[in-house]
Image (cartoon, rainbow, N blue to C red; front, side, top):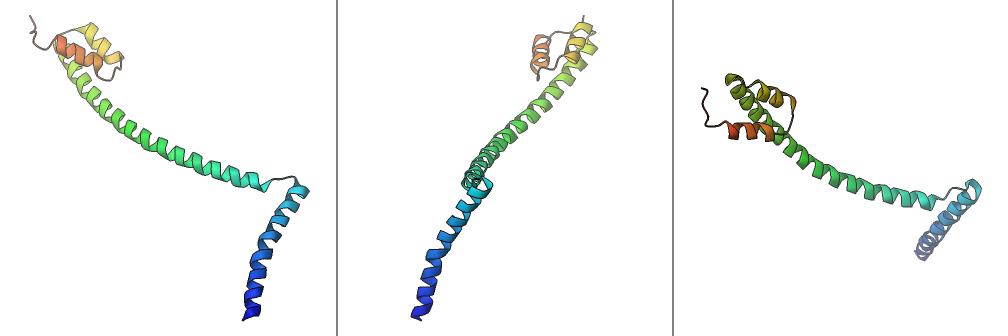
Length: 118
């Protein structure tokens, strides 16, 4: 039993030393530093975590852009319909050309909300 313990102790002591020596020899022969590979791997892991955080942030922003686009589409459609019914060609063309995420259609609808066609 003691021989097995000594053998295990010897293996645990010698193997890491042999691995370190092998890495040093590879570094000398190839000129390649494997420690830099480990550091680069760890940096890549940190970058992956940062990228994952950015994806979470942008997914929330993407949802906001979708909501704004839907609101813009509704406001623009309603404003275009009103301007065409009132024969306001300049407003119709401006509303059709400019994409302002609902600002211009909202301004138009607020300005002409209570005015009737003469």
